[in-house]
Image 1: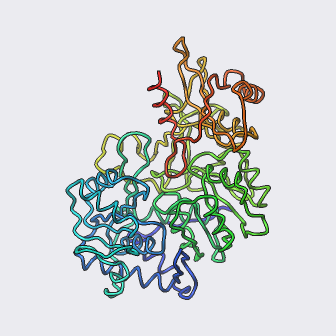
Image 2 (image 1 turned 120 degrees about the horizontal axis):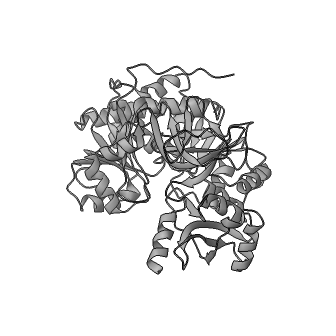
Length: 521
């Protein structure tokens, strides 16, 4: 049965929407972080007081504030409090350099900054690199004495009286996320108030079917589009409880939350799932309470999904989303999981595969460029008209990914547009080769790029990380792949490495490997 989702009203404030949704849950725990808990009633009070504080600072409708915080209840209050006030939070990655933040401060013209105490020195370094419009800094959980222009977030909330929500529109800018582009400067991706609603309804409710009784935990951080839905908009729209963690999601840190807080729903990325399965500390099924797991960020290899599912006795729902679409638009779903694929279009979204000439591909098993149509598409890239036009093409959004679709309608990832290889005139998906390599019991991770041979022809090269204590020869690797894939797909070149370059979300950065290869010629 298809679930009907009504569009939000023209006048719409997402923070107020969450407050109204949870009006009857004042005493229920909403957030659990590293230092304590916050009920839905307390969260509502803090959102309203935080919004009042922003207004008292003189911030006006649609002005931007930089949000540079570790995952905590303060992050949620700062984000929703900004939306409630009609102020636009620019949520940024906490793992970047001062130079990165300097660019973002200048690009966004942020009028204030909201920062964790542990990250304040980095923010100060960034502000020393560029002329900013930041006049005040709100510090969450400071680790040292504050200076003029800085205010303790707890005081900021306590000293202001609750206010009514700003009169905002469903289609007006609500928040920004910076894309994690593989090259060049990051792009400020502008999202509306309604976009949060659509992803919560179409994926959080209709696909994941989150319940009030759920406790959820996301290894992906709140500043990522994936994590924002996982740990904020989806569970709070359902009245569930959220576990938040400030530290990096190492296997040991993740296991601690899975065991201590007994979440029923866990969200992770393929690299994280693989690392946890390889850890000797992997908890037993009886130690956790998982009923459902989700994966996104990059395609989930079948082997990893099957091993996780066998160990914990629950499905892993693999999907693909993007910063531009805000969350997952193509996904497997509970009870309809085909491991090794990314499933089918999320209800409410339409996807197309297009050939190099722009024509729509209808035949099965042909590689094409993935385009998406859906209500959560971003409004634009800030101050980047050329890239906006290239990505947001009318009602369609270009993903930059290549996919195939089988006869049953399941989509399978075939790589990024700029990662695809043509070997002997035939497209080769790096991901397909990588997925085969990691099936070898001695291989932990692998990345595949194109390398020119002595004739100037492109052949595949594999960078391989072995499991601890394991040894392999290049010939053994080649033979393993030849047994499982078409002959032209096996990696002609093999290099064993200690680690692979990755983004903060755990995505392998093939472009860095290509750069290393070019410099070595």
